Amino acid sequence: MHLILSAVRGLPGQAETALSVAGDVLTIDGVAYDLGPVPEGGRATPAPGDHPFIGLITREGGEIHATVRVMLDDTAAPDQPASPWAVTVTSGPVTIPADR
Image 1 (cartoon, rainbow, N blue to C red):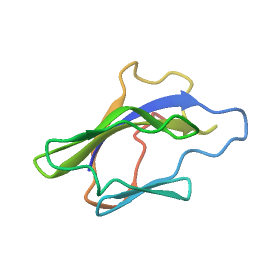
Image 2 (cartoon, rainbow, N blue to C red):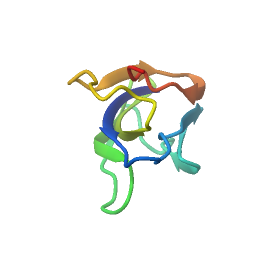
Image 3 (cartoon, rainbow, N blue to C red):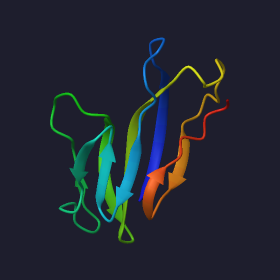
């Protein structure tokens, strides 16, 4: 799974976003999003509402591509790179590469 992580600073004391990948399922803060129905070469638009996705979700070369908004906690340095982070994860926890 190819993820673009778009970071925002959380409120003081707010927990950092927790993400993990298992196959086509992306779990964000305990909520599992099954992205398996996105077909090869296809795209999905997240339904309006309270979710962490930004823009389209696509599948290219068998790999899901999605942009996700993530909250940084108090351990993150105040100044972070201006560009979002790109990470590729096949399975397990997703590490947010914030400067600490």
